[in-house]
Length: 419
Image (tube, rainbow, N blue to C red):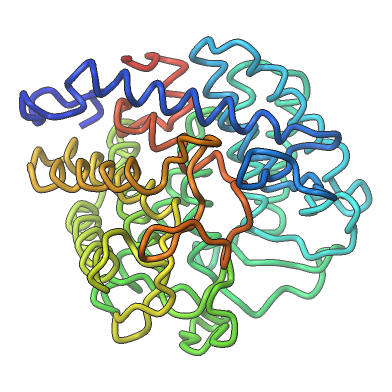
């Protein structure tokens, strides 16, 4: 299960076995890394416009900075020149301009010191730190220690086995909300923390999150993932009904998250077994069920290719825009399930999703991927402005070649990428 390409399970004609496909993945990854370097500015990293330029008034963002630290750390581990200085720049920004020097924790913008402290951002800071320590940049160990402290002191709810969502800047006024999105990214971060700290408690915490969301909540909706709850775990069906294109907490359900939870569940299963822990027998079944629901409810449901952004409670399209990250996560889920099971059904989906990305999302004129397109495949900016993301797209060029466990940066550090 943890073999890098699962040769016993994958068919001889699987794309990922072919040197030409691996070379194509490498080329796409390099293009993404080169494009996003332009976002490096004073104070961190900022999102770029459609043509790869800094928009007027561009400001560094903490989440984007943390994601870039993670991405360029994995690039440095592969020996790609110019990556380490970018990691060092991002780590310094997270330790200085974005950090709340009075109360601790991180702000999304350096010039907005009194905004709420979000679990979503802190999960990415932890992921960034766990990758940065592997290349030994200055400040990475301090960042890791600080991120762990904030999570354990404020966000982790031992009673519930999930992350608390947000607080005021002074850690008062906990939000009456429990969210799937922040807990999903915390699951990814916790697996990375387990690898770099050696502490299996992070895998056990990740399993508690996955047990609640994947095994307890998703089956109640036919293995679709509900996103929004209050602190009593009442489902908030009408949450953000007036904000259907919200980029983090949209109304309804998000098929791209179904498939993202799917591949994280498979990875967590492998991580637990790798460390001699018990992996519940339901993990593979639930991961497969989430994938099938995500593809059935999200892909080509309006007669046009690609995955819709959100669906309503009847599993009908609500916001039909195609967002790039959903496709990156869908192909990662497909290849991970293929590596886990050997079922050619997942190889078919892997090829289908890459075909869509290649023909519709990859921008060969200006670089990177369109972060959002219409159902007809025309670039739009209803949900996301410009091309701010590196994290999702770049990881999708690496994940096919890597084992299910350990986590991405640790796997690259230990075994390299088999281009």
